[in-house]
View 1 (cartoon, rainbow, N blue to C red):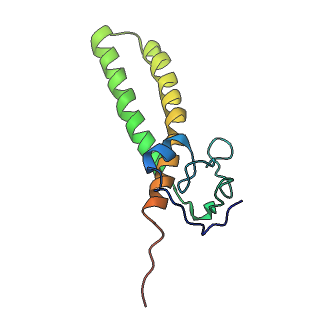
View 2 (cartoon, rainbow, N blue to C red):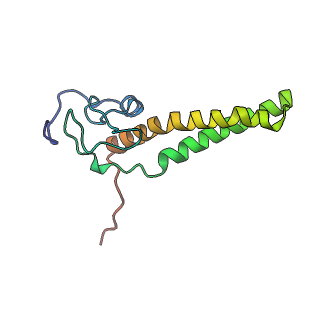
View 3 (cartoon, helix red, strand yellow):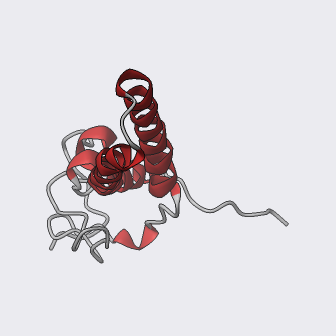
Amino acid sequence: MAPENQSYDRSPPSALSVGLRGRCPRCGRGRLFDGYLATRPACESCGLDFRFIDSGDGPAFFVMSFVGIVVVALALWMEFTFQPRLWIIMAVTVPVTLLLSFGLVRPAKGLLIALQYQNKAEEGRIRR
């Protein structure tokens, strides 16, 4: 494993590409996730310690907001266009909600972690 303070000759990878692919925000090669949403302790490629990661509820909030708009728009479109029974609307919108939610939360978390690393974001401190 490479030391954490190792310098790299190449420019850092884009936060968008590494975040959406779930890769290390420093080298772009190592895997960020260990499982579905749990992060690894460190990058297996460059050795970056992932203890700095704190995405909090950000990924869930952004995914929930996007999925909510899409699903409500879909349900309203179905209602006004076809006027189906309620169970048909539910049979369509519930799976769409689940698929979009589970499909988007991991890339959203990876993106927020990559942006956190790239922008050196950390918890605020009060100077005394």
